[in-house]
Image (cartoon, rainbow, N blue to C red):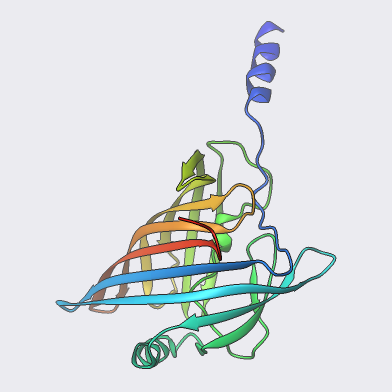
Amino acid sequence: MLWLAAWLFTGCREPEHTIRRTLRPGDQWRYTLTLQGSLQQQTDTLELRYTDRVQSVDADGSAIVERTLQMEPDALKRLQASAAPFGAIKPRTRWRLFPDGRETPLDEGSFFIGAFRYAYPDRPVRIGAQWGRVERVGSLEVKYLCQLEGIETLEGASCYRIRVQVEPMPDSLPQMEGAMTVHVDTQSGWTRQIRGTLNMRAGKVAGDFALTLRGAPVGEQP
């Protein structure tokens, strides 16, 4: 029985973490998404800035959020053209955001690259725990394999550090694979940072991309 008691004691020492996003009226988070890619021996960089503002919160913790893009008109047109197979990208849209990372557009046909539901496990987890999720956007279908690696301080904020392996699903078009590290704020549950590399293939066409996302509450001092 001593080994059972020791096992129980060791297991109980490591606390469980519930990774959920807290949505409060008036909260605003500002994000910068940078995507640097190489496709058919040509390189290009896309920088996307946007702000999420919580307008109202329902009893279940979900919220109506206004998402506003800050982009030059030419850059926005390029982004809209490249994203056309997945949906429409508009300068201003409304979404319903959920504590578990889900994001549902309230404007018909809207699409956005900023949903990170895979980083939110559907159960409390301990450091070292793993979980998976399959997500689909248009014809792109991806499996995310995640692991909570630990808790660390990022620019003064306590964050969950989550390692994400990206794997393509068999019928996905294009095929996408890669790896990312995601930092989620332990207090608010909002995403603070993502860094990773992705490879996308469609037939004989392939591209490599470096992705960086940085987020912070509006008004936070660097």
